[in-house]
Amino acid sequence: MKEFFETCGNLIGVKLLRGKGFVKFSEEESQRKALTLNSKNFNGQEIIIEKTKKREAFIRDRSGKPLKKFENYNSDTMFEAFVGNVSFDTTEQ
Image (cartoon, rainbow, N blue to C red; front, side, top):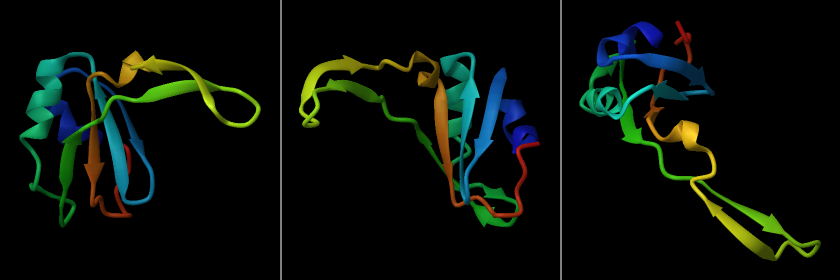
């Protein structure tokens, strides 16, 4: 998978999890290039590529009620893309 996305720009990392994955880039332009590969054939599968959604975090009390919300607390996902419909035979390389 790394080889497939290296053409988009400075790839920081790849993570695979059972038929889906995440690719991280150091800049937004690289992420945009990756998004253009949506629906392309990769290892015999038509892959789905989407921009990773902003994450939110909460501090909760003992009952689970949110006390404080932190938006975009994980800034390293800013230039991350979700990759779906990945063959189970795919490796991170």
